[in-house]
Amino acid sequence: MVIKKGFLKRKKAQMKNKEIFQLLHKKNGQMKIQQMSFMLLGVFLFFALVGMIILTIKFSDLKQSATDLEEQNAMLLVTKLANSPEFSCGEAYGNQKTDCIDEDKVMMLKENINKYVNFWGVSNIEIKRIYPENKNIECTLSNYPNCDTIKLINKSSSGYDKFNFVALCRKENYKDSVVNKCEIAKLIIRYEEIK
Amino acid sequence: MINKKNTKAQEEMVGFALILILVAIIFIVLLSSYIKKSNSDNVVSPEVNSFVQAFLQYTTKCEQDSENLTIQRLIFKCQEKEICSYNMNSCKVLNDTLKSIIKESWNVGEENPVKGYSLIIFSENAQILNLTEGVVTNNYKGSEQDFGKGDEFISILFNAYS
Image 1 (cartoon, each protein chain N blue to C red):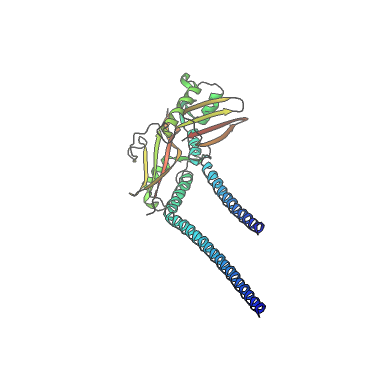
Image 2 (image 1 turned 90 degrees about the horizontal axis):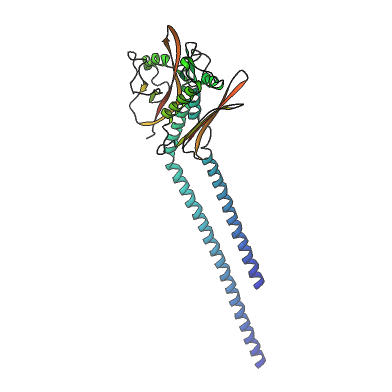
């Protein structure tokens, strides 16, 4: 009887130990699941935050990108404008030349500029002589060629300027003959800022 | 039990190291692309290209057969050490004209965006002209152009330092 009682007591104690062990294991597993879910939540929040920051930067940069695009277009336009038929020297001054503007042609273009106002899509086009020295005299048919700046399109607007160097050539009378005279000028284009 | 714990810790350390390596690689790739982008500023500039093209066509004071020569023709004249009309030294005219053109066009100065410049004109055999002024920096816009007359070839190298 005593042996049986002892046996039962031992069995009971064993059962209790087993239960405690199982409970501990269960708690450990729950802990790991919790850790994992916290980790996943953390990773998700991190990437969401990074994504949001990138999106904010991208969208705030959109206006700047539009202005940059305008700038690039102006730069491309200014490089090809000097070689366009309306401006270029062609073969009037010897061989075909690049970055050479026929001043006589441009003065005639200035007289008919109303037909070309929206042709190039820029707000200002100006040709400024820089060498020999500029006295800042605007060119008209009455003072030409003793002047320095030819304002072709002059819409009053704010914006940024882009320029290119050009040779500004014209025909001149010298010792009873017609000679070529080329000077250095800047072809300036103004593009509008995106608001 | 201790052995199992050690292996697990080692695995976690390897994982952490892998993440660190991955982040470092991404960082290096981004950094190299940024450096490449900033280096691309030192390239041939259309502005400088157009400047060289324009000054080559400039009509100088050097006269020959009742006609004023362009800088392009004056370079050949200077190379041959020929004299212009009215006993003008062709190389001196070339030197003075180019100096004045650059001064008016680039506004070189330590407080200005363009800190210095160098213009070298050379043929296959010799240097014809070398103009350098201001500070020479690593940040520059440059252009190199070649032209020829018969068998002779001339190269022009212009850099504007900022």
